[in-house]
Amino acid sequence: MTDATTTVATLRDAVRRFAEEREWGPFHSPKNLAMGLAVETAELMEHFLWVDSPASREVTHDPAKRQEVAEELADVACHLLNLCNALEIDLSEALQAKMLKNALKYPVEKYRGRF
Image (cartoon, rainbow, N blue to C red):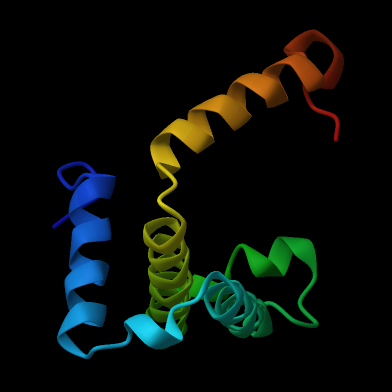
């Protein structure tokens, strides 16, 4: 599976089946999943703690570090997709709507090269 060939629906189904096989439904409340998402995001952030911005772009040049970062990203994605499943939110629709909102809030002419 690659990003180019895998749909969000396929990923959501994969994390759904994984959780169902383990009977984790009672533990997958929106509260628990949101908190788990925050924890996993913090674990991802640890790889960049105390590294300046230019050096942070080089963290994954080390193959072992790259694997660790990839695993944390996958953990974040699993929690996010499980939360979408629990709340029955279509991530693609939510992302598209938010991008349209952001485009109005941050017009290219005003924000190109600025943050």
